[in-house]
Length: 326
Image (cartoon, rainbow, N blue to C red; front, side):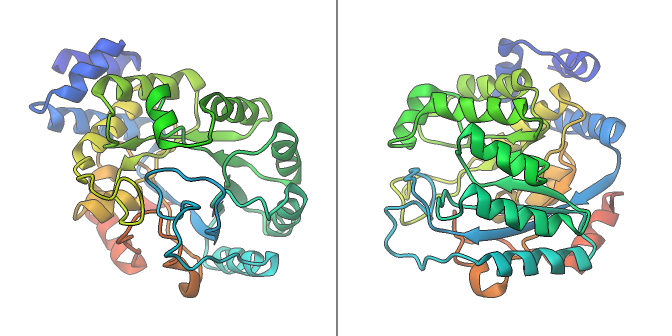
């Protein structure tokens, strides 16, 4: 195991077999996490990048089995923020010192590409980077958004196991998901993807394929985390025990893709005390505080029990592990 970890650290290459061996083995987790932390420090440094997350709509056309805001969930209060409300939240985030704004929503086609382009152009007046996370759109729509000033796009593949993808995403097309990611790369977006860990039917083999997919795509950002079951979804009875495996997927991904951005996701902290800090010590270098207004923040419930961030405590925690805010 130490030889595999050393190889990954030096060459940033592993075979699928070597990745599965690392994922299966529990005795060398400490060594794996420490190696990923060293590579993170070497390639992206000790500064933690903060991204201001604005969740502007929880109205979704899709029915993903793991997601609390799926279209079939009738026990949720739906909302949409107006263009003016989104721009105001972004402006407030900029005043607070953020250099990147993340505009995230459910798959809500009420927001046309032209409408979103107007929002982006307004926010870009503040000279900040904009990341979009709005799901599957056409090449033409992605092009309009890029030309309006969007810099990055996050579209998680969730799983590269085609059969599992089909089971969990009714009326969605795996190949279209891949098409979207290729279009984003072609258009020059910094392209992010990622996966859910702990899905029913997911194997170590498929997780290894996920990691190799990230590398083949040459993604710029990887967001991943454990499945946290939501009571209003078909996966409500699944046990949430994917934290440590998520951490290992994160660490291996850092070793193989040394200079990418990787968030310590809120799901990590929700499922495990100090989960965010553990992720930051296993390869992560980004944290995404939610700056959505209090009235709507709790309605964007992809999974239950989302942990919010306390700025003062966050900075103190970062200092304890030798990290500072960028």
